[in-house]
Image 1 (cartoon, helix red, strand yellow):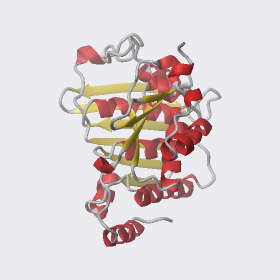
Image 2: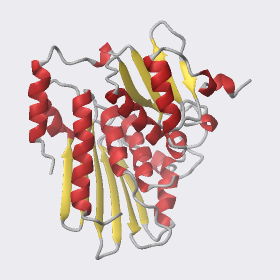
Image 3: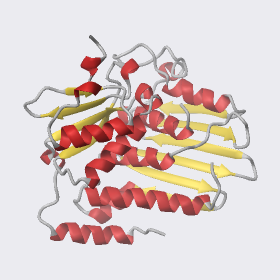
Length: 123
Length: 184
């Protein structure tokens, strides 16, 4: 059984590295809508896929977090990518698979995955 | 909603919006008594009796983005539709307690589903809030108290990648031990 002992070891390891990162260090914020509408349409697996991928790929300047209802319930699950100095990108009708594509193309290579953005749906 | 754990995620969002600093989530199954109980207790701002009377009404919400509030009505319906009970008690300034119980064997009872995913999401996205998570089947219990975790970590944030990976495994493995092959 995994015990809290292991946490102490993680702490020691982290302290020996140079300064643990701060939330404010994050350059990109990825926000998933997590109100009833989002949750019912599958936001939880999308958020879990995003945070897993960001961890695995070691994207230390990306923070994945949640928010309430964005007000576009019919387009849930919605993922917003917020980056200082850039316009907000809103991805709609997301799935874990699409989310991984956003990680690869947008978060890692800086290319907006335009086929999943809201602009594709409201023309 | 297809899983009870999604209802938990949804209802706990209310606690977070109510400014709770401590939220206790208990999943307790008694197989012999054929009952599954889910309790969510928070120390948020609470509600007056006036508001409390309306929370099970789908056309009541305090939110401005839309006119409906389905979290509580959905959860209540999930309990009542399988011979269970639902109650919500609240005191302004003290907090709110939501309790639902379900008949384990009822054909219409939703599966609990990915409760680990729900807890992981809640804990890692709301690092300012503390959670006590109790997962219990018969006499097997697993408890996670984020206050304890934070104390061990000292100043290291909960959402550090190494800590996130640890938490996910910790939740998954301990649940498996409590489950002991039983699927809620």
